[in-house]
Each structure stands twice: as structure tokens, then as C-alpha cells.
Length: 92
Picture (tube, rainbow, N blue to C red):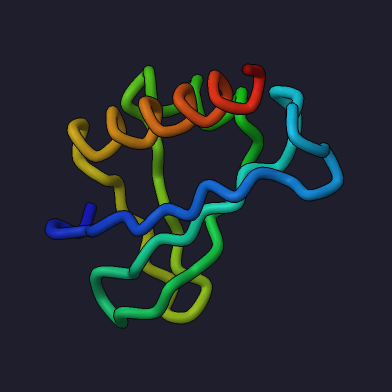
């Protein structure tokens, strides 16, 4: 695990899903690699993201330099909270 990883998430949803995405819709995220500084896509679906973050098992991979890292539990909780908030806002 590489320390100091900073997650920079983009919660845009999937434009093909419309305004109320399903849990299987793509949830694009980017994370800044702690080694090379490149922003790499970490896209997964809503359900997968919630499941992994709630279990504290999110791992990111940099396609540029091959580093794999795990954000700390606080960062994973923020991701889960943002996904839940997005789903609530879109279902309203």
C-alpha cells in the first residue's frame, strides 16, 4: 500500500442511464496516483462501489506506473457517502 493517496472522485453517473441511474450503472471516478501523480480512471458501478467502500476494501490501480494502493478508511467512507448522496438526489 502506498501512503498519502488522495482520491479525487468525479461522480457524474452514466449519461446513458438518464437522471435516475440503476445500481448497475457505471460510476466513473478518477484517482490521483501517489507515485507518478497521474489521474487514472477507477470506474465501477454504484453497487460495487458501495459494497467495497462499506467493507473498507477499495483498491486503486495506476495504469501508467503499475502502482496499486488503498485509500484510508476515512477516504473510503467519503466515497460511500458521496455515492449514497448521489443516488438519493437522483431518485428525488
